[in-house]
Image (cartoon, rainbow, N blue to C red; front, side, top):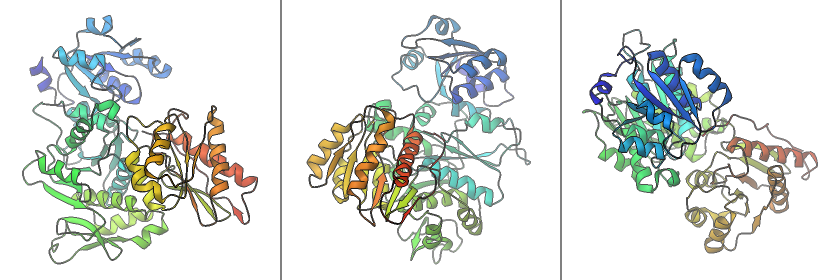
Amino acid sequence: MSSRLDSLTSWHADWRGLRVVVLGLSVTGFSVADTLAELGADVLVATEGADAEYARLLPVIGATLFDGSLQSVPDPVAAHAPEVVIASPGFPPHHPLIRWACESGIAVWGDVELAWRVRDKVLRPDGSPAEWTLITGTNGKTTTTQLTAAMLAAGGLRAAPCGNIGVPVLDAVRDPAGFDVLVVELSSHQLWYLGLSEGPDRLSPHASVCLNLADDHLEWHGSFAAYRDAKAVVYRNTRVACVYNKSDIATREMVEEAEVVEGCRAIGFDLGVPGPSDLGLVDGILVDRAFHDDRRASALELTTLDELAVRGLAAPHIVANILAASAIARSLDVAPAAIREALRGFRLDPHRIEIVAQAAGITWVDDSKATNPHAASSSLAAFPGAVWVVGGLLKGVDISGLVADRGAATKAAIVIGEDRAAVVAAFARHAPAVPLFEVDAAQTEDVMAQVVELAVGVADRGDVVLLAPAAASFDQFVSYADRGRRFAEAVRDRIGRGVGDHDTAGPDASGDDGR
């Protein structure tokens, strides 16, 4: 079996009749099934609660569906006798079907592994497949992926942001238009599956970056060490540039330990003065000293903090993301002028430190995308002294460290969500002097209305009310985007009824969901 799988390293290899079980039928699972069916494989998709549209399409593309309980190995799955199981990212290592496959000696892949193997479906004019760049980190992945793609496009390259950002990598690989570079955002889940790969043609990116590392998804990985090890896979086999965060020692250690292609360089970034292989800041100017012939004596200007501030991009964690994206773009020979031009036209997605309204001197900020303590810490650093709206599903993460580091500097805290008790206890231990308010709303639509009323009661002119929950949203909301939208709607509704003098509503808050 392994010898056959070892030979399947091209779109043009013989995939016919390969028995595959695909776990999950979301957008990723369907992209896997569709690809394999086109290649002639024998595909069984196993899922719990199939999306009706995808279920309707499966027989059309020539795949079979099992829709039922996956808490044990279903008879149709066992009878299919798969040579490989390809799992959607939602299936954790301890899932019964993943354990069964591993214990049975069946190869287990993720969608990224399959995409790498068939990356030569559409070639560049020189006859080679698109370059791959990989982006991960606890926070900032999507923004950095978007920034990188925008910089590459400004430099004249056909770039496709894909992966965890919402567009399956397989869809980008199969796009008949073709690309010069795939900018692949990878979650820790996808990287865990990628780490299982031991074939002769393992993924080897042009450049890679882990932006930062903090507790997250511990319920999926089982421990912080396992989460860290999954993230470290991003650097494996990198050929040109391993980009790391100089202010986050964990990312530097990942690069030091990584098995890379000979000649690959370590490229650092942070908000300090850069060394000769780094990107950083000098007197408010973002500069490159890594991809510059005279990097020992001078630096190349990319943009300035003043220019970024005009675009709402000057928060410290966003500047760090810009430097990381610039490092990847520079590794692909994008000129500094193109990077500057890309930044002039760039706008953050909704629900990422988005000002949704300003009224009576109070600024209302939606950072609902801050779904873990690390992200919320960055947001609180950008808005010191804010009235902090915090809470939700903590996903097994201890919020005490965040409250100890940032909580005492807040003007007040408004606690929402299912895991309120843990947040309240953290404030009692680490920031007892901060006024604390709990929202114990049973109905989703009531939560943000109560939040806004409480905030109006405590915020004064010049204050910021900051939604940076440090937690997932699925206890009370459909998604972080739904949470952010409801916050903005509640703010606008309250402003319409009068918050104070000189009321002026800010921009609307809208946007798509994402994970």
